[in-house]
Length: 276
Image (cartoon, rainbow, N blue to C red):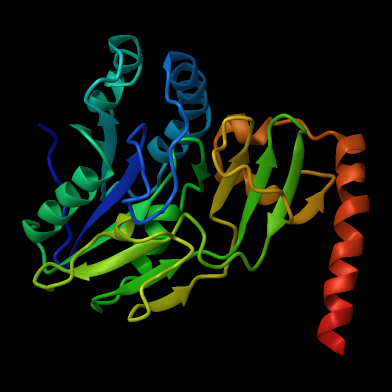
């Protein structure tokens, strides 16, 4: 059983929903893809290559990583992630039935925390965070129930197209964190609502100093959202804060140029409308 690391004022949970299904009953109001062995194997590769290193390399290790898996996850998949139980990061691999059970378990953990407040932070299993992600969240902590900490700046990388883009103002993204009082009546965790529709009673604090996340676009993305950030032809120095796989990711000049030719007219049209 891993030791729960706590601060005098808060406990911090980084939470990854590895293969827990979502249905229309859940707060995200969408259906999960078919998570067969092929999907799990390909997703596991992304998890081990991009997500895991970014968590293990955190400069601030005063947090617990909660990884939620379906009870019927194949043993072949489990064998490849069990090593995380032995890492220097406090990690809990938790088996549950569905999304509702995930939220219920998180609420229970928050209520039972050995601190006045709990921070819950989202991290999808195919995305990557900077080494200072946890530290920057905790530096922004305030003892305010319902406060959301958000990093508007980040990157997107399309693995198939090999296109890097940068976001400077991507608000309400999937990397947000929620501060809750353990005694609050409406505890729900950061997974209790979709990241694009935060509770109206929440106060949002945007930390805009530097990019703190990378969203990976690939053929397994359920949302398959189009990349609409600023195109990058050269990898920025800020990528030194991210894992080696990100730093070594190739950029296709031809594909980036094609993307730019589509992206630029949209930007100019939007700016023209804003000046009217």
